[in-house]
Image (cartoon, rainbow, N blue to C red; front, side):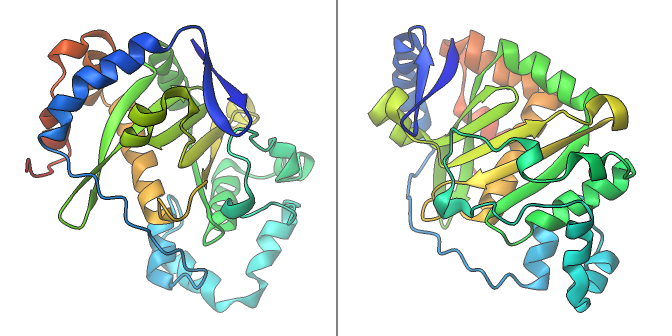
Length: 270
């Protein structure tokens, strides 16, 4: 079963009816502990210094303070030849991932140290409607291996006084996050709220995989929520204990309990 782009929606090759039936069986369990409340999250382009710190994976506080005070912040981006024709989330086509060479100049990037390249990549995406991150190649290969065996999971997203449950689909190098209720209602025609692409061009030479996330519907998901979802998804696939829940969801669906996910995240069971 594989993800196939069809007019901006999610479709699968092969039958997905079994998965949809499984999701319906799970819904009675999840509905007991999840309150779905998709309230609009207003996106602001005037990102504060504290918000910028929230989005960054690698840049420390001192570096951010220096960057915020230097109008030439763009110089580092320019040194890698970042292409400013990149569209914001509101104009992003979710299932047409941008190739890396359309975002940065690969020749210039080849001469950068891994740490420097990762920091520049993260900085470039701050406050732009995108999420920038990176990971070691070894971790990426583990994620790739586990995702090939377990392509789906559910993650609770806390909002106000309840939970919204996100449905995760993984087919490396891509991840798609969709509201569970939307997926249950529309199946393979449900559009993703948030898409993630992993770029492996520097995995061998720099032991570095660059990650770009795009919030497709800013009315349904904020940048901070998207960043949190990416981090949590990685933790469930890369942490041995948490991955057992992913395996159970995919291979032993009838034994899966959503409350176990809540407990793993130290979230209250309502």
